Length: 320
Image (tube, rainbow, N blue to C red; front, top):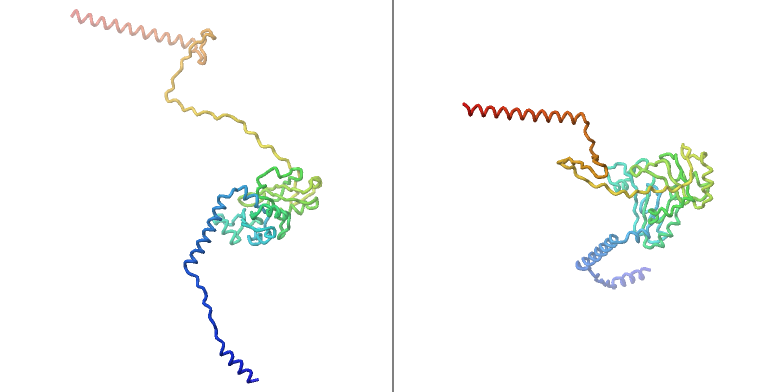
């Protein structure tokens, strides 16, 4: 046994280790790699700036009723099953302190005390992937029913079908989308719930809309009018009607006329059609006309007397 061990040690001494020199990266190569990375970043930035917004919105989805505690990584993990995600943007964040920015409020999770949900925009690399991601509309995520729709459809009123939707009023101001969802889920499958909120505080304004997937659900929901409560309030239920926009009359603007510093009185000349009757200005009363005539006669009489007195004085001077 000992002889075998000695043989092994003797053989180990004979082994020579060959060191392979590693290729050291020169400073020139590292600088080139950094330049390539920076150029790629600048190119991507320029593409984002000059990209047509309609093309970008075609592969972007809108996600509503997202829990305020949710992060970008969690949303990316949820929607990455449909394709590659380019960006995730969180919006409608209302900070606790208005002087601080929304970004800082999101990092520190210092939201308004009445804000429970936020919205998000997720951009995919392809339009088909974005359309497939809308399958998560109504998905229950952290006790919140997500509202998922294409971003380009948010500004289009044509997609909202009034035949499949109802109007709800007299809602509590602190009501949530999920509270309304629970109240009407017995009527049928719900497409989405939209409550109108104040942009400054995210507090509800007391009304909203519920869009069903089937028109038959609307009639069932209308029967609940007067017998449906959300929170501590009995809500009103009506059919959603699109109000006609007021038509603006094309009235030409008034021209600005500067005031005349010297106002000249225009004399009204008699026209042929009126037979000597003056147009515009009303004639004076006859009593005033007689009074002025008498005053003019007195002035003439006095001027004649003064002239005669001057003639007499001149003649007396000549005689003397």
